[in-house]
Image: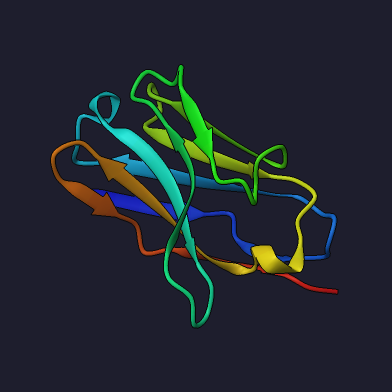
Length: 114
């Protein structure tokens, strides 16, 4: 099983980024998918989650209204559209696939700074 994130980078406050995660080696459509993030010195936190069919989404209070999670089961991808980014969104973002087992990507760095 492999999850590979992409799309991170440096962006100014108020800007946007779109993260993408592509999965392989698993029956993608069976898995709930999540995005987590971990800032330096802080615990990893759940940012957004989407059900296996994509009909149900959840967000942390800190990103609600600014981030949107989506998935394309035909392409084995899950995306995180991040708008109105803030410096406190700076973190390494991880893709997670969960069913019985939990699989993680290697993470992609997002830095929000002027």
